[in-house]
Amino acid sequence: MFTDDEYDYVIAGGGTAGCVLANRLSADPAVRVLLLEAGRSDRNPLIHVPAGFAKLTAGPYEWGWRSQPQRHCNDRVIPLAQGKVIGGGGSINAQVFTRGAHEDYDEWDKKYGCTGWSFNDILRYFLRSEDNDRLSAPWHGNGGPLGVSDPVNPHPLSKAFVRAGQEFGLPYNGDFNGESQYGVGLYQNTTRGSRRCSAAVGYLHPAKKRPNLTAKPGHLIARVILDGKRAVGIETTTGKSRHRYRARREVIVSAGTIGSPKILQLSGIGDPADLREAGVDVRHALPGVGKNLHDHCDLDIIYELNTYQSMDRFARPRPATVAAGIEYAAFRKGPLASTVVEGGAFSYGNREEATPDLQFHFLPAAGVEAGIAGVRPGYGCTLNSYFVRPRSRGTVRIASADPAQPPLIDPNYLADDYDLEMSMEGVRQSREIMAQPSMARHVKAEHLAGGQALKSKDDHIRFVRGHGRTSYHHVGTCAMGDADSSVVSPDLTVHGLDGLRVVDASVMPRIVSSNTQAPTVMIAEKASDLILGNT
Ligand SMILES: Cc1cc2nc3c(=O)[nH]c(=O)nc-3n(C[C@H](O)[C@H](O)[C@H](O)COP(=O)(O)OP(=O)(O)OC[C@H]3O[C@@H](n4cnc5c(N)ncnc54)[C@H](O)[C@@H]3O)c2cc1C
Image (cartoon, rainbow, N blue to C red; front, side):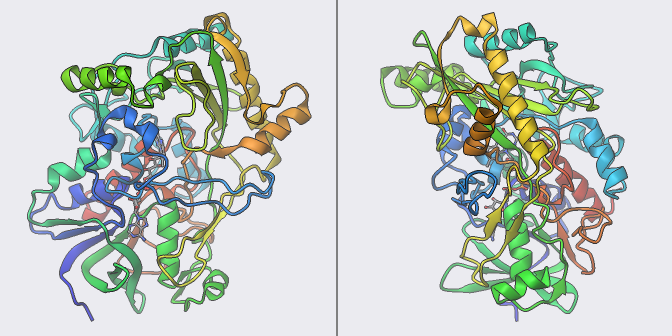
């Protein structure tokens, strides 16, 4: 049955979580580990230069997924970039380092039945993963694989944004990952020495010379091989041929929030109705697979500046770009050392919430991400906002039994009216922050996508429904918990099956109140202890 090698652990997906697991599980030389990834290697220098983010949200390092027409967003089909490369999302993301609110994890533990995942339980995994170059105990770790640092030379506009946030009434916050997220400041980044520090850089590459670890990019996973109710291996396809890899101990699916439910469904694990519709035999009925999809719905406002100063002037080849390249190569400084997403804030849309429920990202540039409007090069900046605890839920379903076919992804953005209300509040606060003296003095004009005015409530509704988009923070489709709708237990084993775990952002039962990379690293760190019995 198995044409290829045998391993102890086969990890299906070489993204953020997969790279963490590859390192931790192969630390024991007696254990053979295989990491399989559909995308290519992360050798391209664009991935490693922090500002390269601006060139990575479309192209060969992402899957090119598209949403189903979004019913509550004027039936728009929204591009949903997800990493397809060693390092996954961590190789193409904006490198913003946030963990969410402590209370997020306490809710996982109490409300969703994720025993052992309260903030007190998981803090040590955040600390173990981290190598922070400014902050330390009690909230930060030093010496871990994941490099975390401050912006090297924050753009003057980013500093102006931080002042404007204070003029708006937010307290200055020098550490969004400390006691509280509330306030305005500069984000720390997953960078080390002015280079991106993805989980591939921090975890996988240092472990790659271990003879017991094999990483295979360019391998599309077709399914998990089941022997009765036990997972015994993984089948991959290269188009023409199929390969099978036996897992003596466990298969760990780490293909991300879209990829993991897709692989389970292709393997006959999922909601019987979904599987039958796609022409796949039901091997294990598990209705929650692919349900509970959610993401932060992002709203961008673009501003035209009155002087030529923004970072988007480096987006095209010109003498200044060449000079910036030389400065970066020689000194690891200058515009290319910036992740572009520098300023940040957490605020309250609803004052009765225990923790901030709105998050903002300030970019001293416009037109940075694929599909987002720009202005004249050198004259743009962007403030985006989202509601951090969305209530809308969507689905991921395979369209057919063909592993090469994209799944049907329906994030169902703004289905819940409260999400719409909070998104409007985020837009309102964004404009108020940008109207404060420290920012207003730089701004010539506000450019709302579609060129519309924003005055009445109806204008705001039209804007939010017309322009809400992904923040790339998909989670929840293989939710951890004890409810019938959950897919994995708190030890991340798939309910009702042996030898199979899911370890990635898809297991979050509810999204954290921030960006999702650091929480995914934490999940994989804890998973490695659960797998090795080190708890
Ligand atoms: C453009 C972008 C910007 C972002 N910005 C930030 C940010 O600034 N800060 C932050 O904290 N988070 C950010 N995120 C989110 C963060 O990167 C993700 O939450 C995190 O990477 C999720 O990790 P994961 O392991 O669950 O999935 P991923 O990192 O996506 O890894 C899954 C891997 O599995 C592979 N895979 C999937 N299906 C298959 C298959 N069938 N066969 C083989 N391989 C497969 C994929 O190619 C991928 O490499 C961003 C994400 C994106 C895409």
